[in-house]
Image 1 (cartoon, each protein chain N blue to C red):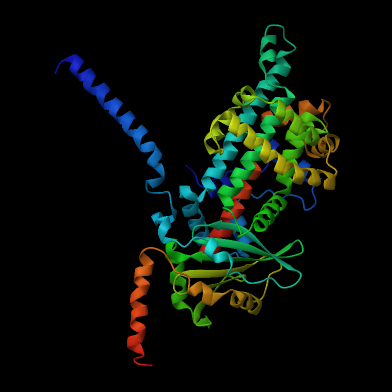
Image 2: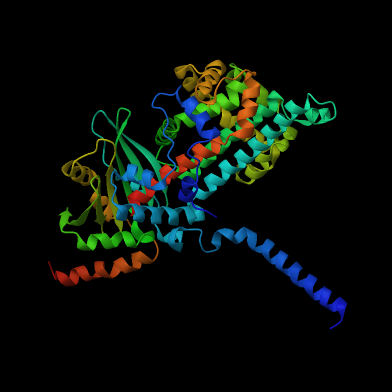
Length: 185
Length: 294
């Protein structure tokens, strides 16, 4: 191979790599690693849907929304300047590991499994899909107060949320099963 | 690229930056606690010292900060861009101060960006970075504009020391006590050239809404207008002034004999207050989310 040909091939290779990189740049957001656990955003329920399901604050208390992302919404329950608790709803599609702790759960709230995490946090798994969590801050809340707070969420509304994408397909058969379980009711 | 919590763990426990913030925090009720340990932060949020829980939260937080769309990493790169620019500009001004005394390097002194306009543009970039970082980290919380405003206020309240540092170090010290009132006029005088001179602009331009320098400049002005209302109230409430800021800083940094603007230059060149408190603010929000998701 002649010297010029080698140089030419080398330059061609470098040039094509550079052009390839330039062409791919706008598609960076489609490359893996952009979303949590590489789950496509379309399969995760948007946090906006969760906002209206948060409990109404008591008089003298305030609910301040602090974060809203795909599959997540969080608010602070405040009394005056003091933060009493963090309230959050999340879609466990991006965090499958979060589901496993509910398997060992013995207690239930409105039929959904309930788990205590440490001395200050309580979690509830609704419809095997949405995690509702109350984390007490500062002086804290006792277990009953946390359970009452979780019960004040619109849990039925949360269970009825229509998840988009693949999980919806997984839910449909169970709906179709219902008439078979209770024939001609 | 390191994750948010790794950056938090690497923050200095005691250096000039920490001392400067500590000094300033004496002006702000509630004070400031220099959190430099991710485990400590997680334990604080969760209210539990269970190592199993802490490692779960940590793993989740790392996963979240690696996902580009979640914005936590992007917020940090905004703070980094602003910090780099501040250091570069501050360094040049320090050189100018030294250079002014030596005839040979006097020309450097003429090159340095010291004008009030430039300082005002720099401040507006920082305010814009703050707003962009807020939406990157928190999304657009709530269903109404009122909810969003409440979320912003909540964030600003949590970051009180950080906001006080922004107001004192970047407005009151370099521009004088009337800085907030003068800011709009100063920004009105700013042109594309002033914007281009700031290294932070190059790093942030792609994240600012609108196309072209003119659109960016008007975005910056509008952003600052929004912020001024809040900052004015905050300054009045704490009665902040350049004099008070210097006195507060003297409690930790030792006596200062120079002028206010020299103090500002010194802080710009040798401290990373903005980045330091930025990492801490992002880390807290990230941990609050991770704790809710595990």
